[in-house]
Amino acid sequence: MLHIQTPLIQSLSIPQNSDTKVWLKLENCQPSGSFKVRGVGNACEYYIQHGAKKLYASSGGNAGLAVAYCGRKLNVPVTIVVPKTTKQKAIELIEQEGAKVIVHGDVWFEAHEYALSLLDDESAYIHPYDDPLLWQGHASMIDEVVEQGVTPDAVLLSVGGGGLLLGVAKGLEKNGLSDIPVFAVETIGADALAQSMSLNKRISLDAISSIATSLGASQVAESAFELTKTGRVMAISVEDSDAVDACYRFLNEHRMLVEPACSASLSVAYHHKHNQLKHYRNILVIVCGGVGITPTQLDNWKKHFKL
Ligand SMILES: *Cc1c(COP(=O)(O)O)cnc(C)c1O
Image 1: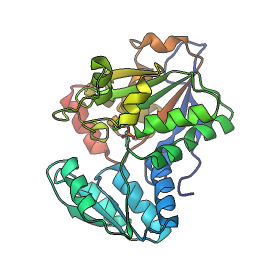
Image 2: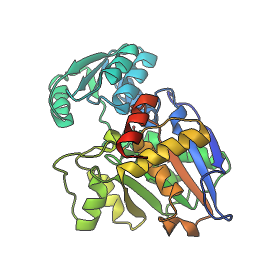
Image 3: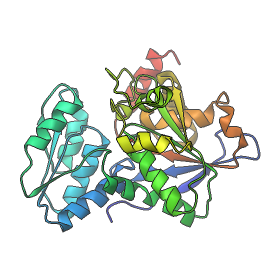
């Protein structure tokens, strides 16, 4: 097992009515800085047990970092192909884990295709969100929540390509909670799930215009779109400025710095306008984390959005 058991704490500062408890699953405490290591760890271990000797991935974000982390722990060489838009800081973090970084392509899809072209019989490719092995690994966070003594009646989480959503849905199902609602939060400009749901067809965004780059999958996994047909998934889109505001509040109140991709979910808990939540008594918020944030970056976003 490559992930750690993360704390589950009750937030007293996130305003809700007095009958509601808000529980924070602190996946930002994972060794790779995000929940990704749960699924990625599960997939890496599986592929290596089945003969893989090298690992490849194509993300300059938290998925790439998780693969690099797992490769170091498992003693297997890792190559991460990242698009040209990837920040130097992200490349350094991946290299710090001992992985090789190749910069290729203008967008994620080009890096992804190039990584696939490098595979041979001894390599395994770790997709950032679309692999049942990832969902199985992510599901462990719900097992933990239940073991930690909390039975949620609603879940709030962020959606990029939908891997976290699929994993949480799997975990809820395993624990007899498959009928509780899952509020799936995206930022406007990275809202491929919300747009697909409203058009009743899995669409592909032409461009990602949100600052929450970890939510910037142009299309959600087919299985994620299929899951929405159960009627248990409620899509919510928030403004980038709401995510930045929630990021800052979370830092002030809980002393933890997370990406806007993560605070997008927190913003729904913070803002009373989303009163769909007021009927629930035990709301579980997945604090998915993310390493793509610094105090300076947060300051710059705060100024940009005049907060
Ligand atoms: C990957 C990631 C997401 C989105 O997860 P998906 O599985 O792509 O939906 C959200 N927040 C953070 C911090 C992430 O690393």
